[in-house]
Amino acid sequence: MIREKIRENTMQIIFQMDTAGTYDYEKITILEENSEVLKQNQAVSTLCAIRDHIEEIDQIIERNTDNWKTSRIAKTDLAILRLAVCEMKYEDNIPRSVSINEAVNLAKKYGDNRSYAFINSVLSRVNRELEA
Image (tube, rainbow, N blue to C red; front, side):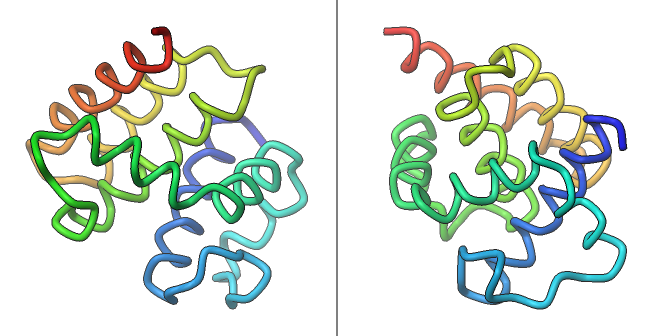
């Protein structure tokens, strides 16, 4: 399975976790088309980091938006942001620029016509924060 597809399926699972109200992927019923991704270390590593650090990830997102709470962000955009911030903060083997670029591509595919610009802006701020 290619990395882009793993990332896309992981984002869909993060969306499912948010909808289910639990950030432990083992406690939700994974849609059949996404279950194959759980055989990939990259996905499991990201989902475990989401489970263990969701509050910190959301705080990073909120600090880097213009006074937006995560509850006001579209669920799809939020899933993409959580995935990218998680990769940027906890995955040393993925360059931050790759995480940002892939998040923008996911936003173009799944978000509305302004999602990609919003996500790019937030993640650029997150990148500057993490570099400091």
